Length: 387
Image 1 (tube, one colour):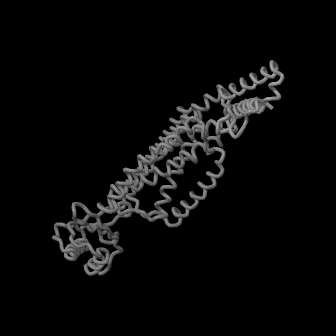
Image 2: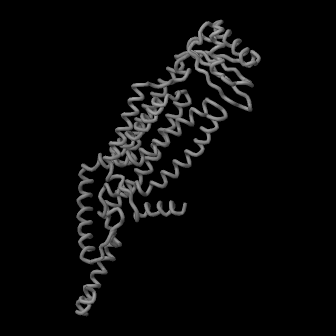
Image 3: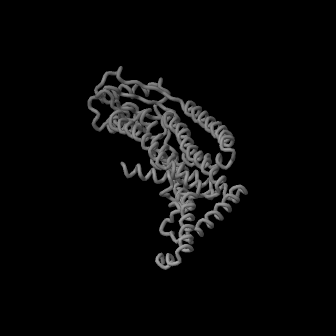
């Protein structure tokens, strides 16, 4: 733990650097491959929507004491009652030591037809419970369509307001564009995971998707705020290029991003474990799964997508080109001073691990060279002994 803390401190102070920006083309290729895989799942397999979106009947059998082979038993009971198994989807859930068997189908009528009543009685008999322990409900497809429509509206409004807010806050449209691209990446990739795995999408999942947007943009804004701070300092001192300032910002916030994600994912993982092994399918599990995938993907995008993309968008701006020119000239002059001082090794006294010539270190190296020169002028034999 202490070594991880030291690692984070080294990243924040600049003694150690990971070159995220310099390898941005690698991240672009990797992300492109992952998005293609997600697109194949989304447009090839499609999404597995829950009954709330497809419409149909749901029959719940509570207080089941013997749920062994529940899937086959439910299919057999329904087939005996209505002449077919009606394309059933059967799941179970546990609560307070009892098991609930949940049967869903699009072909059991509208909840008031005799078919649904027959199925309820047949399931009660099969699982040995009273008829009052069996409940049924019908959900029309229009409800799911309405929820989807409102979710899309909310997403569009959110993205528009976010673009305006970020453009005003950061005083440049490029940061807003990079943040929105990272946001869309998170949402698309998370939905792609659902398509590839076939995990059911319920209304709780939709809520999870919208919640992901807030977390993802928060993580990206924290990094961008540090980029702006480092850029302002670089413009004043001229000691870093824009890419170096942005890379330094990602390194400074790297440990914070990892810690925040881990702290968020731990309770979500606990909820998933409880949902899978104790409670069974339900709203809590659906929400937790969406948040788990979304937060993990959002952490990736804030580090490997948002800031590298920002550098790619801004590197042709006149102000950034001028900053890069000044920084390269400054670093070349300081490197020359350090080379003449004869103190350059793996990392010279004036150079950080990121390749940036630090003013304080450069001044110290220049002072050392001046002292050595004066010594040689005063003591001619000093040159021979030093050499």
